[in-house]
Length: 218
Image (cartoon, rainbow, N blue to C red):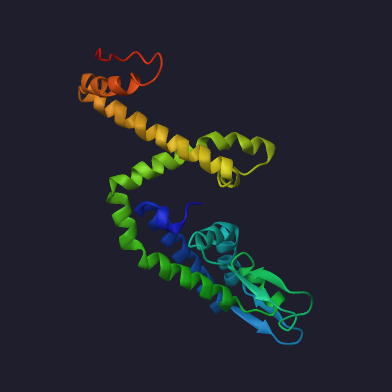
């Protein structure tokens, strides 16, 4: 999933909608549950179960939407917070099981609310990105860069991880340069500037052995 600051406005809208729908169902769930004190457990009414069923299958997508903001969706529990070793609890993915970690569902709701606020604040930036032609050029170049790494999935290697290695970054840089130069050449030829380009290239080619350029006699 693309980071939140790299998506066009329609993707931005879908993510805001998904967050809003999830928050609405969770709010209705909280209104419909009761709690038993001894032993502690959450008692779900049929209405609460309906709202939980509407959200639970989408929690993985919601977590990706939250993480696309480059922020954490986890809470670190120390031995003082609960029994056992220190561990991280994903408050989005385990939204309806947080009571098992001595956490409240409101802790997960707070993460969803913060994500909703962040996406709401980014609406104007999403519009500006979408209307910017250089954004689409960069998106195209990014797709070209990642394409050679996609077959690595067949051997269990994540393409994005391979692209971040030093050889991957070098290959991506060369691909980007090659595509830009190729695009510039295509535009120049389409504008009828082929002869002008050849006149500019001849002196450069003449510097190399067998370059085919012409040089004036001394």
